[in-house]
Length: 290
Image (cartoon, rainbow, N blue to C red):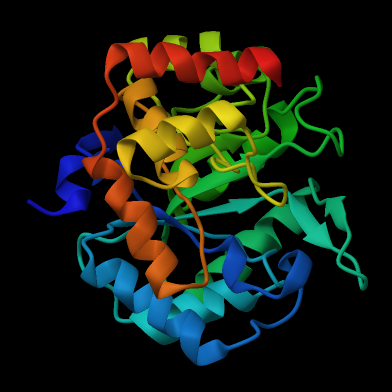
């Protein structure tokens, strides 16, 4: 049995995917801006991900911008029938790589068409609307108007399924009143657990939760407890952090990113780690100390 198979599956809308996927963000240049340092290496990682059994890739046309989607198309098109590509809209980049909201009807519509063109698709499998009310995580504000635009694009057949990113519970409730929400993508990892209650609520509703920065993002997780547990299990700290997320709730889908084939396989091996209850309780203390 491969590591991917051991991770299990969960529905992402009307499709079941393996719980270990791949996030393409790190394939762009430094700061998720500009081209990759090594294009051939980036293409090799994408191909290795698919050959390993990954059937769920997370991307966006504002990674680069336009870099990761073009790499995905260059490496994988024509796509395997079982490959589900999730993208996101709601932001744009300035000339220096800054992140800016892009919530107007014109901007959202253009973003969907850009993703379609650069990925080489006639319809996008899943599009996450990313809320950009704050530069520091979720912030309250109505998503009704931009989500209505995305729902209209869904009715046109350009988008199959819709998710939300960087949102609060009240925004999720608002979104569910407008259209079916198949996934939520928020910041969550072993040390940053503001969404604990939300994850359990979504699990009861059969909605996938996809943590971004599952390993801490640009500041990787650092914890003496995590390192000690990893040493006892003969694993790396990042493998333990991923295994903890897989054990946390069955609706969690992981999209760790990397630009290295070796690191990709290291991440996938996390599905083979079994964390006893006492170890999980020990790891829970990491969040309390953060």
